[in-house]
Every structure is written in structure tokens, then in C-alpha cells.
Image (tube, rainbow, N blue to C red; front, top):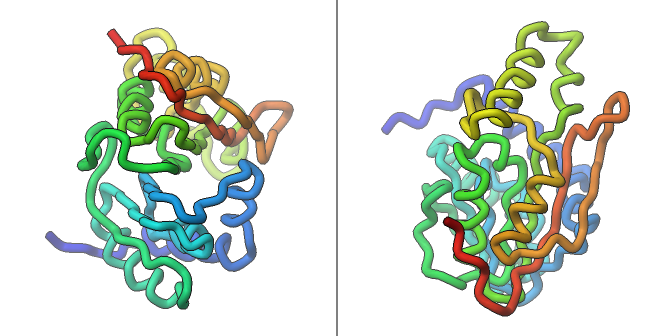
Amino acid sequence: MENRLTKWHDAYIQNAYHELKHGTTRKQLETLNINATGKRVLDVGCGPGNLLVALSTDAPELLIGVDIDETFLVFGRSQIQKSIAPPSAVPTLLRASLPTLPFADETFDLVTCFLVMPHVPDDTVALTELARVLKPGGTLAISGHGLGFPLRYLKRFRLKPLQMYLASLIYRCTGKKWIRNTLQNDRKICDLLESIGVVPAVRHYNQKILGCVATYWVKAIKNDTNPKTMQ
């Protein structure tokens, strides 16, 4: 498989490590009161690994990142090696993605999944899989894009915001995601979490545009009892 670093990949990696360097990545964890110390941690949709670097400084017991994009994994491993110094934990990067994660039930104490939910085919299936690999009492931290997100593109792109809103309308009516980056209602996401036994504890908005949420962040705790079985 050819792992070609495209302009998009390069820009994404540069931005990710810019946010890491300037403390934005760490602030996201602190806002949700996330601490990985001594925990078994999984980052789903890890991209080039900037969140893994931030998590590694907490000295978790185990730190794994998964992503579907092999290019991110290859270049992410290189970036991580340059960014982590002892005694920080060294993460393992694997190729995998929702809705099927290659881990046993109740493996992790903490699962992070930032800016991945807008891209998964089915929210309920994805959230159920994230909950499956999480231990009872464990923490799930997710984020996604709300209705305000496309407004940041209005000056640069005329069709992209329209596509996002149209895709979101289709998703609301049919349950099918037409394109990637489908916008989400964070209240619905929280309702879905509760329905599978993962209770939202913190909800944060780091940006609003014209009063509309651009990006939401949710921290939720898995019930100690077995979650409801989704039909």
C-alpha cells in the first residue's frame, strides 16, 4: 500500500502539532477533566497522534491509537517519536476504525474519540462499539461538529456549507449520512449515550458562530451495570 503524504495530510499534521505545541490539545483534555494516569487508554481516530502525545505525559498504563488512514499512522509514528521523551508513555498505533474495533469487551479505562463522530456511517452503532471496549465506570470523551461549523467556510467556499446542511437534513430524515462531516445535534448524541448506558457528565462548546455551536465536547461515564441492548 502506498502511503503518500498529500497536501491535505501535510496541512492536517502541521495544524495538529501546532495545536499540541501551543497547548490547545492539552486544554481540550483539561476542559473535560480528563486524566490518563495509570489507565488503559484508547484514542479512536488518532490521526497523526497529537492527542496521544498529550495523553502520554500522564503516564498511562497502556496507550493505543487507531486510525483508518495508513498515511497518518506512518507519519504519526515519526512525529510521536520526535515529540515524546521519557518518562512519558510510548503509544502503539494500529490501523482500525469504527464500527469494528479489534479489542475485547471492557478493555480500556478511557476512550477518546475526537472529531470522528461526524464521519461515521451510523452514530448509534459507533457509540455502542466505543462503549463495548470501555470498562464499567470508565470514561468516554467525544467531540463533533454542530450547526455552526459550516459558517466558518462561508467566505472561502460557497458549496461546502450547503452540502453539509443538506447532508444533515437527509440524515435527520432518513438516518443515512450522505457525505462526511455530517453535522450533529449534541443533545441527540447525549441521548444516544444515555440509551446505551454511558451517562454524559460534562458538555462543553469551545466555539459558537452566530449563536450556533461549531464544535461540541462531551465526557461520559459508563454505568457499572450492563448497558441496554440496542435493538
